[in-house]
Length: 231
Image (cartoon, rainbow, N blue to C red; front, side, top):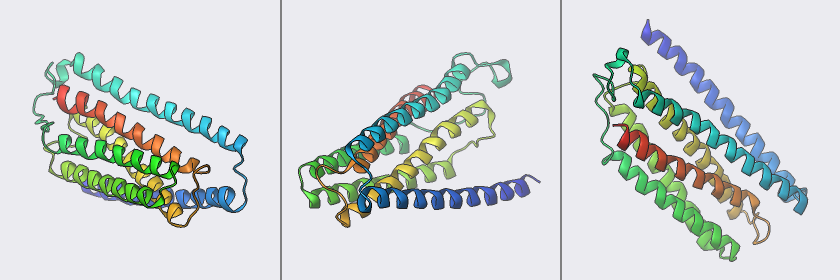
């Protein structure tokens, strides 16, 4: 019965992912059309886009604050139902100094390469910007691969007490943000290859860099609180 429900959930998850990718494709297509071919992204419009991106990142910060809040609430006052200890009895936590630490180095390096690509674009060095983006995307894919490997070899699931639910919810949503950021950066790479970006007209690139740095910072908090302190 559990397996049947899991398979049904997997189907809906796959359909949701396909719909998400189609929506992202159409959205990026319209943005490229408006900004590159129709010239609608004037200075005033770009200013509005900047404020919109800032507000979006602020909303994402509050999104993760809720996850950290629930984690600390459970860890600082463990209930008798989980043994009055943290981590709960029966939970074998993951070592922070193995895959999590490696992923931290990978993500921090990707943030540096994203900054390198951004500054190269501002300086008009197209080849360096392309190289920096390729490195960033490669590191992002590597991070995701290690995260999937960690999930497959973890000794607990999302159904194993409040620790499992808070762990997978926080790290899983971060992984989803890494996936979205990778898509964002891949579009930036494609547009840069197609000569859509100039030194003065590259807000999409800048917005992707902002988003990626936000992903980096969230992971640092996850590493320190969930993997290190919480274990």
